[in-house]
Image (cartoon, rainbow, N blue to C red; front, side):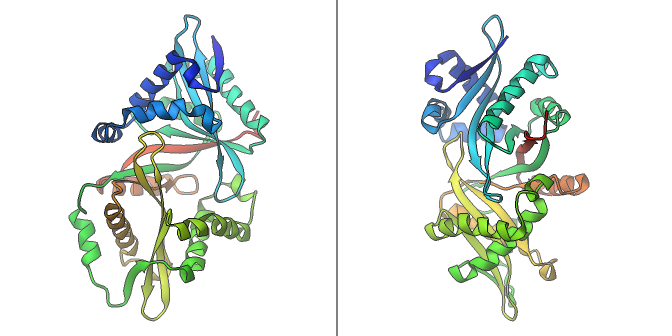
Length: 338
């Protein structure tokens, strides 16, 4: 049994076929439906074949008979909040029967050494939330990997759902929702920072303070807001000014190659809680996505700094509104781990 490193999957057709098949098998039923709807099967192969151009790396577990039993796709990722470069595993799969064996330990150690060699403080990985990946998640947790958040997705049909339309049409004489302008950015950045800080891991908090976090957010988001690749909606009161925001990043699904919008944060000032402002802002976000031809929306459900009971309650509410938990993001402090 060996651990193979490939810098260009065009060099190995067997490896490319194996990873393509495993990527398809890892998809949720909703993602497979989108794949068929948009006829995007070739986009997975295109992503794998452009590995070398992006500077990404593939690690593979190969058995003595030549079959593959696991893989990882590795790249570099900049943490928006801390400003630090991190190792990012955007696809990971290991044959279940090999978990807890020395071979898989060697495989993960190879990933760790890759991260250490590049000076990364930690590694992050995206793991599908489907039932077949639960043993892998449990194994990673046993090694010290921590779940930072769950990633919910929602597919939008050609029109808003009645409940969302009702929220948009409901008139409030005191509060109205509009697109944020440049003068609103400091408010948006401050709320983004407050929400982000509460969800950061202790390790991430050791890398910066609140002032630096606001600065990093401003440096990343202001150009994107000006360019239109990000946008914010704000809620404004007649008497007291801004009281809530929802901020969105527009991009492309990394494997399906179709437009998607990431709802980065929705935050309502505590004094304006209980008015369904968060739900109303989300409904406006979904409407704007549809107007721009975006039918795939994702978000994040912070898990590490939130009680399990609260996570499950929010998860259930989201699933009842048509979202599904696509994956989870986990991280590993490779500097202090052994």
